[in-house]
Image (tube, rainbow, N blue to C red):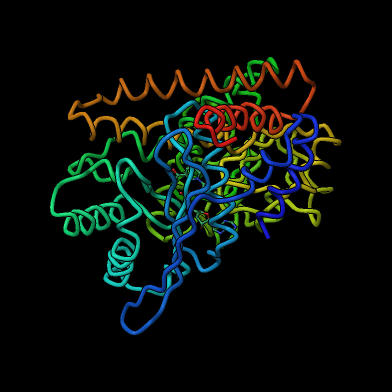
Length: 405
Ligand code: NAD
């Protein structure tokens, strides 16, 4: 149960932060929980759209298609979106959505039908000023395009700002696909500067080779880091001399997996997580580093690009071991920052250039990193606790201003 981890984190941090029972209860509750059963070709799929908090603005959060999607998972992901949007100072609350479906077992047509049924089920709760979806695991610009199209049919007008991560022709932006990876690279660079380390001295292992994993791999490879292992759902590959990431991307595009890449030896996902590297980047799913494998983790630093890849128990052990974790709500916030640019340009009719969006991303990531790092040094707490503290304080201030606390 992922939300159990969140409760434990809040129990731990809440005492030091001096959270009242009322504040804690508010943070652990969700403003809106919607469930539907989508029917496509006689098959039924559970689907959710959940808003955790919207005191700072309309809710924002992606939609995931995965066989393990559950209400507990969507609640957890929406909680992290609230914190992320707050930490990065965006005018958004947090939400998330998901469909319990195995994308490997459906056709492209069924994927489109599920996307359209999702919007039909939740259209009254979604909108540019209510709740704004985006891509997540197994959803992409094409899925966003189908969803926008269905939504605009229902409301009988254009409203491109209702969803982000769209194709460029529908109001999307060229930076969105790389944004989470790029944001993660900015944070890592700032963090390593503080440790007085250069990219050339750094060995990296990356779990997950989808949107986030392959983009961070490419960016770090181009910046001179040595990527010695990557993996996907089918397994991992390792080369102690470093992988040629361009070639791995081509191999993965051609064969649909990184496995069997010729200049490498095979490793399992658990072996990848326990490699003796400088930086470990979980970029797949939640609950990957748990009580079962935490004692074997040898990385010096962990950059969490997946949401919730470390359980709260494992997190405490990593902290005691001196392994520094750069938390998800900071490290992977680049995607939502660029989504914000896309939403703004759709709402105003102005058009950002890629350079302008890159600048916003740079400013937001650097500002969030420095505020978090400063508190981490000052209070001698973990980076996660520092990020949670900043994010929670902003949400609670908004709730107080509204008279809800
Ligand atoms: P994706 O569907 O594009 O890729 C997921 C990758 O993880 C694939 O390579 C898949 O093979 C791999 N994978 C799945 N199960 C695995 C397992 N058990 N072991 C190893 N690898 C496994 O998804 P994505 O958009 O890259 O998202 C990855 C993570 O990043 C998720 O936690 C997501 O919530 C988070 N995230 C994504 C974005 C974004 O902009 N897409 C933004 C912030 C956070």
